[in-house]
Amino acid sequence: MDYQLELTNVAKHYKDFIAVDNVDLQIKKGEIISLLGSSGCGKTTTLRMIAGLIEPTKGTIRIQGENMNGVPPHKRDISMVFQNYALFPHLSVYENIVYGLKMRKIRDKKVLMERAREMMDIVQLSGVENRLPRELSGGQQQRVSLARAMIVEPKVMLFDEPLSNLDAKLRERTRVEIRNLLKRMNVTAIYVTHDQEEALTISDRIAVMNKGKIEQITVPTELYTKPATKFIAGFVGHANFFEGTVQHVDGDRILVKSKGRHLIQAVVPGAGRLSAGKEVTLAIRPENILAGASGQNMPNLVSGTVTARIYLGSTVRYLVDAGEGKEIEIDLQTKHLVDCGEGDTIHFSLDENNLILVNR
Ligand SMILES: Nc1ncnc2c1ncn2[C@@H]1O[C@H](COP(=O)(O)OP(=O)(O)OP(=O)(O)O)[C@@H](O)[C@H]1O
Ligand SMILES: [Mg+2]
Image (cartoon, rainbow, N blue to C red; front, side, top):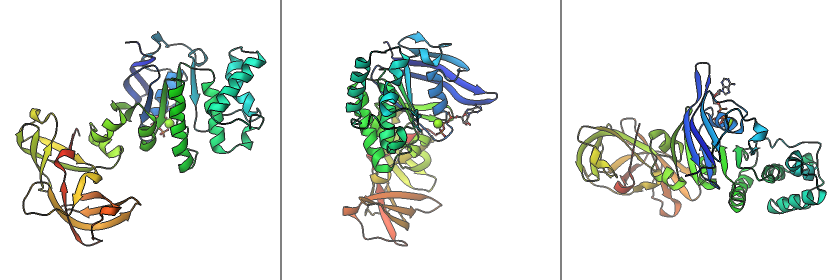
């Protein structure tokens, strides 16, 4: 398999500090990959090594199979889009957009005009080509920087939190536009963000980084429904955790006694490799907890006291004290609300098919 971009064992050390730790990444032509992770986990450093702005301490970066070690940034055929847009303030929108083509020695005015027109159509900037960047809104400036990066048809496009300066509504719309645009032009892209929703909407696959390492790389749906580790389950969406000991294994079904003395039955693929006595962590999303169940000493039934009721529009989140210091989050559809407020006792059940076995 030929990859458009391939990182093998790439690391960046600053003296004793490991900013990026043995990252492996293979990206196919036209694929959009997000690097998702909290502040300081090594996203920008990884991106800058790919761009050639930082020299890796070790490892190999290949673009279309060609080793990039020692190749300067301007010879890598990569475009980068930054958070602050980095537009040339004294150049018009048009001049900003054709800048990369001029750098590539394309001088024919007609060709420049045609390519710029095409790009401005795509990013919907027609009509403002003669304005200066400061005469544009934030969203328009972002589209100029997108057009400027894309017009040179780079082998790889790199995005470093390009939408964080936009307001929420515009951000939501722009990320869909970026994805459509990249797909239409079959551009290979790496998109850095710490916003999980942005990563879920824009990417073909998401690589979650933690302390310089890629902890899991997979498609968005799988990341949410089958997070590999406790960190990822808690970072991508909300999750409740139950630590406990396996009591019994039967095929894919396990019975776990949690530290809070809850009995939990779960159907988890690969349960066969577990045996009684093993310590495990189970996770469940707040929306996979069902309210209103009751029964004595039945597995998966839990009761607790509501400590907060948070109205979120389409859902209501209940924070529940389930005893022994265990706080549980439950999301209920507003239209299926139970009549239950702060201080009340709530009974609920954990859906056995939606419990996830995660690594610690
Ligand atoms: N030149 C440097 N010297 C020493 N440490 C550095 C240097 N550059 C970055 N670091 C450290 O490397 C780690 C990773 O930095 P990086 O900029 O890649 O994080 P990030 O994931 O992009 O975070 P953010 O979301 O805040 O932008 C951080 O702890 C940072 O302090
Ligand atoms: Mg960064």
